[in-house]
Image (cartoon, rainbow, N blue to C red; front, side, top):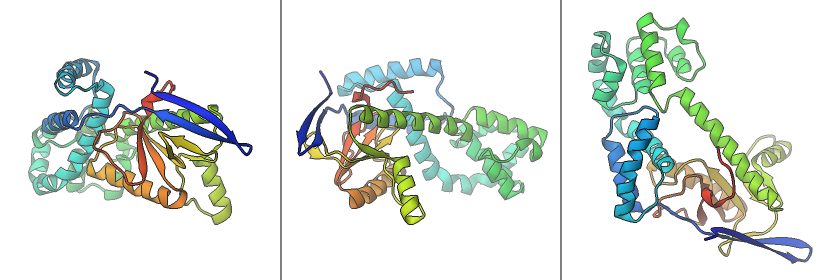
Length: 301
């Protein structure tokens, strides 16, 4: 089945693009099952090849049970989102136990053991420990943003624990920087895809330059603002924003997507959020079409 087709009409010397875009969303019941598995886990490390093989076995059972087709890549994306939500939800618990955690750390309990015991990611946990132990607040914060050399701040023991935490935390700054670069590269591929169809559009950079010239500051910049009329599944789409993850109703990420879409809709008219790893089928954003990017003929990173 061809999940992406388009036709071009000419009206009054203007091209009109009519696109058929067939989504394959993730069934909410299958997503809920995966979410519960991740919530019960105290593993915050990056996913190894061996763990991917285990995930595939788990997904085969879930896909069979819920008539789904969830991939390991989608599982990893869901995992990343749920872990971030766990950090937000459990932060107050950590603060209530931080004195006990610090006592154990100072008694030479390894940061990875503490991470598993208290179900909190190692880099975030170590940051709170170091602050509780009286290290300079600004320097510690900068260090965990890769903006201050840990060799200038930490003791030999703390440095070893820091390096271990960074290595074994999927959400460490170094790992997140790599993820951010991939997201940016994929976003540019999506923009290029629509340009190659012959659709006139403005990119985020184009809009930023225009707004800086007109207003002296950047105000509002979706990834793509379509200049030519574009219809997807019969609805006019004025803008599109690409997201390099699974679309879910997890509070922190949904709130961000919702607010962004409402601003774009108010300024430009209805648009679309396009999720790299598809989306859960209960996801809804008023006035906004939800799409999954895997239908596009793009060799993503």
